[in-house]
Image 1 (spheres, rainbow, N blue to C red):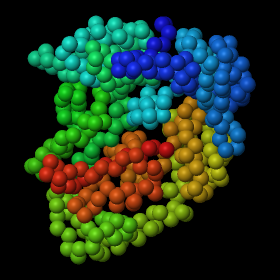
Image 2: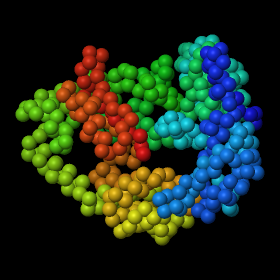
Image 3: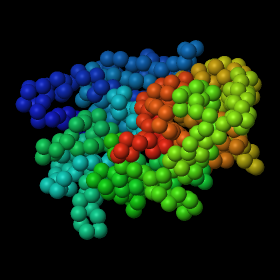
Image 4: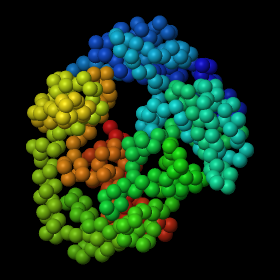
Length: 459
């Protein structure tokens, strides 16, 4: 595989600044993520192993608050060519276990929904008429062996504005992502990891319809795509963030009673006291807007009591975690031993089938909600060589909803009216996590469309 080549804008070259971008000492190009380590592997052992491929500048195994290995590490070499050499010699085995090696991504890339996926296919946006598949191959072949390159066209043979390239190895995609921006014929391309259809529900937030079901059509709405392409025939898709909500979003459902395409289905909403102090809620009579119905008074009092009860620190639901992605060999005891490093456990159970075989998930209940918070803060977690998937366990009535099993960072908020602004939403929801973005949706006349989105950083 050819050595890495940084791709920089022509404007930087003209200004003589490309040298800084291409410096071999640039840390991000010299750093590797190492996963799947055994708990007995030490910093010294890992450094000794990596040193056989080049001089190691830094080697750190990540540990929990008690000093125990979390099963992954970061290694920085002295020169980026050593990273290429290390990746060319995969697979690597250390202390009897095959380890996972990836190029470490910058924080802004790693935090994207698709940032943690390991894929061989990448999406290329911004394709214009004068860019051909040969142009793409010529530009990207230096990052890895290309198996397939397709510029997408519609049924009338017109460009749809994007393309896909498939490498024979995931490292080709990672190198392309790491070495952005990419410019062909003076046009900067939008490079992202292509998301397999089976992963789409894990990285993007769908909008529920009035039956609490997920609108599968939402994922493939033309106005969400660059140059209005649709991707329904493909097994991969991609949404550019700037195009998420640039146009009205019709919520499509065969049972939707709303005839207007840009109006949310009727919803009855009950508000917690934190939001009811807003000026919008001070009116004794609330008019309906955007086809949304509101209720307060007696029902609201009951709801507030339920809220207070559910938020009680002694409520078992708030002390329980769902643990997915377990190895078949993980037992109740090994899961308990790992989880108790973060605090006292009252219950731990790996779920099994009728034959006594592990179903590869379990539930852990701690004695205090603060321990759950700490456990979630310390993600990712590695157990028996597998990165496990911890989530806060949901009540039975919530778990029956089709969308509750999605792992997302963005939430949909209905019932938004003119008096409820973004600052009020931020103030209420910031106690649940760091908010990256808060957006109340408006139409072209500046009127609220009755809903909003909040995106957390997921930490």
